Image: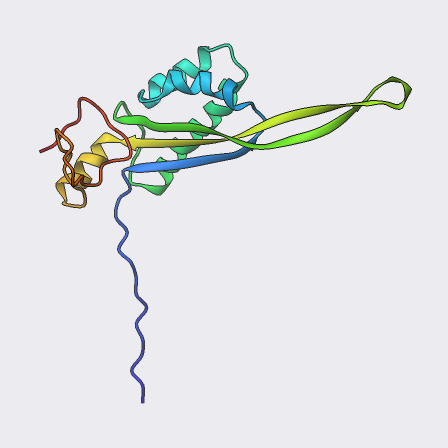
Length: 164
């Protein structure tokens, strides 16, 4: 008789950074970029205030993505709320497909209309979870000066967060 196979259950470790990827958003990459540049490496609360007060159309879409990544962080981890330790560590916009349409004109002619879309990537990092992650030995240290044999680094860099 064959022994019973026990299913392998992978241990779930706490995630210190959570990601959201908004795809095919009907928004030009350059127009999204001017908003994204203002909120990169800011705290979550400060980001929400900036997005509410900026007068661009892209702000509402990016606001929804930032709010969504915070909701994912609360739901998927043991966090009760995102405080000042939550930082938008990475936010990018990439060019997506261009929607092409034809606008009918006089005498049976038509003019092309090109609507550009973009993909927006948002990553929220909780510094408290990151410190716990490093102290438990899941992470590597950050070097002061890079050498020839560089070790893997974090996907973002904060000047105030150096560990030896």
